[in-house]
Length: 139
Image 1 (cartoon, rainbow, N blue to C red):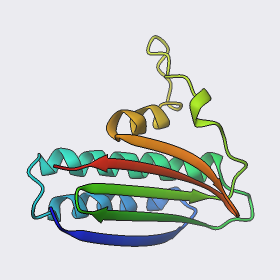
Image 2 (tube, helix red, strand yellow):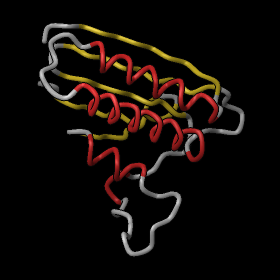
Image 3 (cartoon, rainbow, N blue to C red):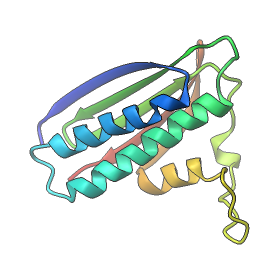
């Protein structure tokens, strides 16, 4: 796969844009010419990680004064990288425990889902906020 795709998306910090960003990820996944895997499964997974990450950024990781969410999606060769930027106080990705399956709740599973789907997930501090970076190798 020698395709190269670079998207830089800035959206208002509103949950009504979750489906839009998910659809962008789905469309990109379905358009990959040289991806030999299941495109529908990939489209579903990309939609899911994008909407989970954006929802987390809206709900937990934004200063009240921030009005936008920035997301970048990059595909170079076989490596898909999604970054979601926030201006919140941050958190320690390593200390998040998996959700308790015996007590299913409406929240608390986003990062667990992202970690399950993606090959590598990091969260790091930047000069003006943080970035959740998710990588997946496509074959």
